[in-house]
Image (cartoon, rainbow, N blue to C red):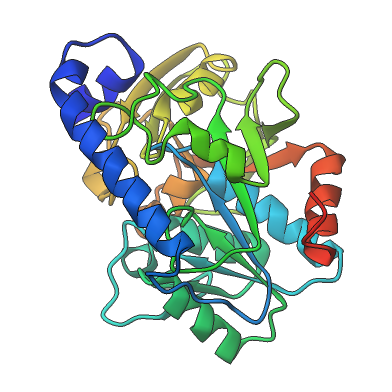
Length: 327
């Protein structure tokens, strides 16, 4: 359905054909939100604060590196955070599923495994976020829950809502699904606590930059190379993330010839997907690397990234945790 997602970010007549469905979608969203606001549908309150990290649009906005950054900030402030996730892209024989650094991505999904590896926080996956939260608190001594995605999962009552926005693609044609990329109308941003833009965004209060320092060998993580190590080479770049072009653009700034290979977000890679007859280096994101570990070759490399944000955002989140009335 790439043609459909492309139509969200560039002029295309199909949007007018889909507009009636988008209006119906908006009506359903409005009625559903009202049902939770009036307590016609049950909202579940946890005994510890819940922080939602989500977005209002389809596709990658940088939620995973932000969640990792947030968990690290909470830990440094003395909190014991736990993470819950839908585990999109994974399928387990049972839920809730406790996720560790060694859990198969086929069961947990790529993002929860990556978060578990990078943060050492307890991570629980369940399509029902309330069930995941209850299980997490029954098994771990957590004093705050970070929900990776789930902004629209209103059954889980939340204390803080943080929305990530891709500063390049932003909101496309500003229409709701299926004519546009929005899961909720833009007006939803007025009710969340913090809006963070991933990348350069003029006049926006909170911006996130993703920083990469070195390449790590997928077959032998003890081997690393500087960011410009492949500058004069031809390489293959693979990306199964929400916005592959962001990764390809980054590589093009440092490497002479890049052959891009885009896959669907959360794609389940096989050895054939990353095998190329020319034997050139294959470069990938860390999110993709966790799914390719079992068939890694010496010429496979991945690029870990870390989020950098203004210190004022971390302090504002901590202030709101201590005093919910603090905006």
